[in-house]
Image (cartoon, rainbow, N blue to C red):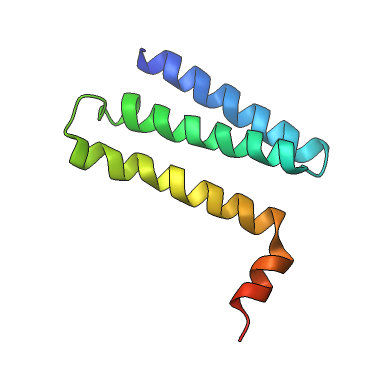
Length: 90
């Protein structure tokens, strides 16, 4: 994938996420769609713009894991705030 095509995809995904966020309060389905969009954008940046597609796994996998761990944690915090607050209270 060329860098110009990568930029086009990043722009398209960002605009779509922004429109979804502005039009309504996202429910669980839309939140998951936005999280997947952010994961895809992270993958595009890591593989194509940072040129880490063919580097060693020890470098690439931790960067990809950031999106695989952080975004589900954010989604859980948004979807279940009361339950997480109860789990973390003293």
